[in-house]
Length: 409
Length: 229
Ligand SMILES: Nc1ncnc2c1ncn2[C@@H]1O[C@H](COP(=O)(O)OP(=O)(O)OP(=O)(O)O)[C@@H](O)[C@H]1O
Ligand SMILES: [Mg+2]
Image (cartoon, rainbow over all chains, first blue to last red):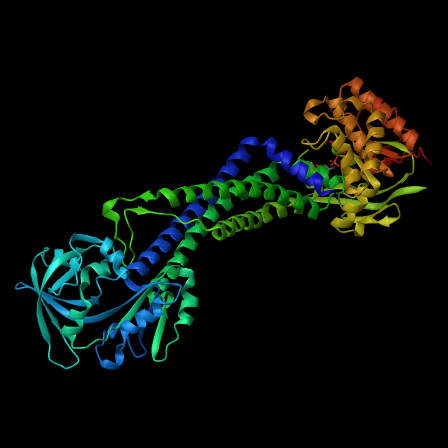
């Protein structure tokens, strides 16, 4: 039977019930728009938090001694890189690499006369552009220099907790591989506010050579941290950096915890999508069932003319498909526009909310990320859900006995 | 030559505990080309009998043969097919598809039979002309009078050249003039095409058109009419 006739009948029926059709379309459109916007927002926040975390805390790639374990913060010779400067130079020769610089980590105790607290020491080369992001997150004072004074930068949260200001002097006690603890007095030159609570309340930054000095590790470093020009170059650069005895870690491995957390979050977001889709599905089912009830008599006529159940079902599914297609197209367009707009302007969420989320750097604005694949898949899911819920009304119409349907005459 | 044969058919409707014997052992034969009225008081089983003959429903017991097929054994799809190919219906309420124009309503059975566009055009034009509605071709049902709608329904019933048209009180919702016009057209088409017509009616003026009169009462046939032998 000419498909076109089903099409015409479905389409005209939708036009005939203009108000109901428009309301249903609005529901589909808004549901999809909301889902797409949510997905764009979540994607944007994840993307920017990952990007900031890479820039500020891990870099794209790190070189470490094979035996190094991050949580142990070992200073043992075998756990450190012997020639970090040479490795950094070697890495910087790769075209993908923007900058590489050694870092020494140690655990220690930061003290004043009043109190002391466990912290992690980061020995860094202040001159390296690797630390530009840290430089940008300086909240007070100056960045470390290389002029030999005993300077220290600490996180602003830590400073607040310990009631410290720029210019104050603090003790730093470190264990070293020789056993005896070493102590030094440092002057706070700057406070860092990165937006990462983990970074801002437990980390202090020293000049690399001073850190090496105080820990007695000579020229060695815990890692060579590398920033690439592009995230996508990670795999290529990682394989180019095969050095015997050196572990090469990409950002995925460095962010295992964050990525797992994001993945777990995804289940929750999928659940939210499911709820939105379910609401839309109920509205669609209702619209179509009403359409079936109102057209019982029409079904009887069509059955008398010899239309089979299967064809009647097709007719209703087609009507649902028209609704679903139009609504999904509108929703996809509207959602994309919203996501695109806010990916440029951002959504202002205020100073207070910044860095409120543990382990995620969230600025004062949230930016959405436009991901065409996500938009396409949400739109397709919307269509699928609509067709699935339409099966019931369509089947209901198809199953009607012609005599009973005609009884409505 | 008999095109429909009903043998000892009964139809029992159950509503809760009570049962209604709408047909109680009906036997009947309809021959090609006859123009037959089915009469009887309200509740005598006319509609039920038309539904059995039209393969819209199955008898509780007994047999219905249409065009040589024992349709009492048919499943829903097979019954749909035989309706589509062999039977036309006209109902008391004009029973057009509301969203389709007169042209499209008449075209519908042809589409169901997968007939070509050129054939459909020609056929619909001929049918609309036969019922005098060429100028209403693009009107939707709600833009036509009751009489016009019923004429469209007649045209549609004949579209796929059925062997019989079953009409359940086709004039009951028409005024005298329109009822007469509808009957004139049916009679003319019966004579021109040789399609058999069976119509249930209460109206003596409509009965007067028939060349056979079947009388029913209480689910039985009182008088077989015998008009066509
Ligand atoms: N779907 C049904 N369910 C239950 N009983 C029914 C049904 N259809 C018809 N009946 C009963 O069957 C009997 C015959 O009904 P039918 O409609 O065939 O009569 P009819 O001769 O067409 O009457 P009318 O002239 O009023 O149209 C009546 O008693 C009616 O109440
Ligand atoms: Mg009746």
